[in-house]
Amino acid sequence: ARYAYFGAPTPAAASPACGPTAGGTVVYVSGGNFAPLASLGCRFGGVAAVATFDSPRLVRCAAPPWPTTALNRSADVPIALSVDGVAFSPLPEKAQANPRAEPWVGVASFTYYDPELPPIVSAISPRFGAVAGGEVVTVSGANFVPTGGRSDMQCLWAALEPSRATWDSHD
Image (tube, rainbow, N blue to C red; front, side, top):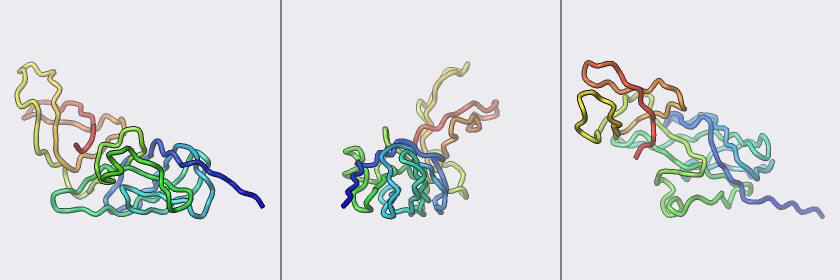
């Protein structure tokens, strides 16, 4: 009789890193210890998803729909993998207590957003700066979409020229 042992899968990164709350985005998860088993599975923030084995270092997962509320239409969630369909890859201690918490540092993650809604700004910090500009400003809110390193995210300050912005998280 043959016996095969597979170590715990270790998802490290996901591409694309974002998609609509309706689900359906095919996400390529890279990492290690992936196995070509029928029981291979993904979880997005605790929600089960279909997984397809590509290689010991690459798995495809179809992002499931994400539940939304009137106040929260975006979410950052960790991606966990299982080779047996029961034991999923360990998450950071914070994630074990609350699988819908954030941020996800050092694990594969995915950002859900609602493509029908514009970004919603709830706070700006600092609230004041020099007239000459150059101040780094943090804009908080909801439904911000990661730009994946592209430079198409911008902030518009009154009637001035737009300034380049980078996406950090939904915190």
